[in-house]
Image 1 (cartoon, helix red, strand yellow):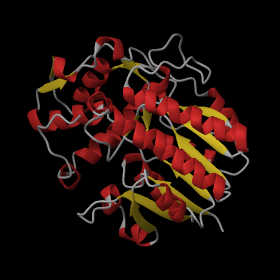
Image 2 (tube, one colour; image 1 turned 90 degrees about the vertical axis):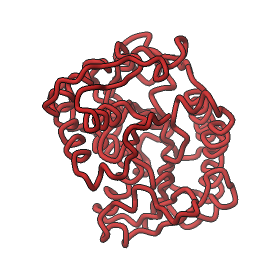
Image 3 (cartoon, rainbow, N blue to C red; image 1 turned 90 degrees about the horizontal axis):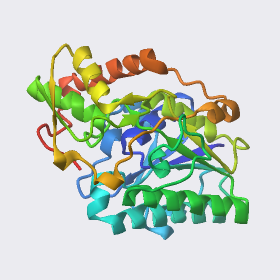
Image 4 (cartoon, rainbow, N blue to C red; image 1 turned 45 degrees about the horizontal axis):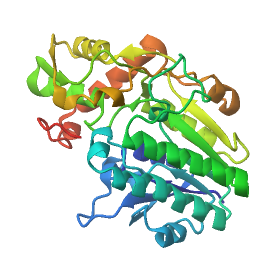
Length: 332
C-alpha cells in the first residue's frame, strides 16, 4: 500500500499537501519540526477528521538517523522541509546550508537506502535569479542571488546527482511564488493583506517594481502530487507557475481594490534586498509540467490571480485565522 512521508507538513504548502492526499484516500505520515510546545504548526488548524487520519511525527530534517527511521515503511516522499526566508538567509547562511543542503542529503540517502519508490524534491524559482528571458524554462541558467537561493541550488544539483549516480527516482519541482491561506507574512501577499487589515490605509513594502509569477497553493499542490506518481517525470526538473507576470506594486493596488480600500504604499529600505541580490523578474514557462504531468492549473492569468486573491483575502479576514498572526511585526 502506498504511504507518503511529507516533510515540512506543519508549514504552508505542506499542510495543504497533507489535506489533499488524505482527501484522495492516501496513507500519510506527516513530519513536523520538533518543538517543546507540542505544536504541529498549521496541521493544528486542519479539519479534525483529516488530522485524526494521519500519523504525525516530530523531528529535525538535519538528523540522518531519524530521517531514515521515519521514512522506513514509506513508499513516497514529498520533501518540503526547508529554511525559506531570504532576509534571514543574509543573517544565518550556515543554517540554510545545514537545513536545505544537508537536510536534503539526508532525505536522498534515506530514499536510496530504503528503495523509496518516488521522491519529490521541492526547489524554488529563486535558483534562476533575475530572468534573462521570459517566460523562463527549466533550462534557464542558474544564478543564486541570496544564500537561500544558493542552498536550494545546491540541493537541486545534489538531487540530480543521486538520479544520475544511483538511479534514484526523483523529480525536482520549482514553484514560482506560491500564495494562499496559511502563508507566512514573510511573503508579500499576506503582508499586504494583513497590513491593510491593521491600518486600512498604509502598506509598507520593499521594491515595488519587481515582477513575480504568483501561483495559488491549490495549483502548486496538485502539481506536486501529480509529480509524485511512480514512473512520472523521473530525473526531471519542472516549473510550477501561472505563466503570468505582475509587479509587486500592481499586486498591492489590486489587493487594496479587492479589499475595498485606497491604501498608499511606503517603500522602506529595511524591506529591500541588497541591490545585487534583488531578483528583478520571474515569469514561469509551465509548458513542460503540463506535458509531462498532465498538470492543468486552475488559477491562471489575471482572472485566475484575482480568484486566488479573493480566496486568500477571505481566509485572512476570518478573525479565527487572523489570530494566528502577530500584526504589526515585520517578519524576516
